[in-house]
Image 1 (cartoon, rainbow, N blue to C red):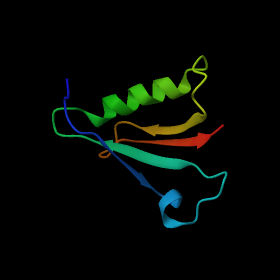
Image 2: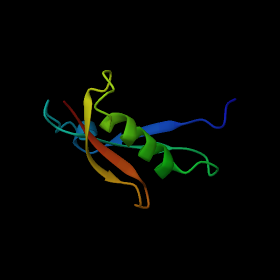
Image 3: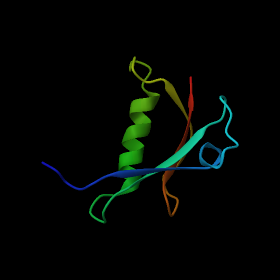
Length: 77
């Protein structure tokens, strides 16, 4: 079942060329109006924070789930 197309968008130093190997990545998910982006980002954050997930190589640095444009800031472990 295909609910809607999902798109992601990176921003910040990752996109403007000032990012370093130790920089974080800021991103958001864009959907249609039927799906709340904050719910999807919250679920992604939970998956990334799960220490039992061996495939997760990221640390959630910050969450802005109630912002006008919800976003996560993650960095490599």
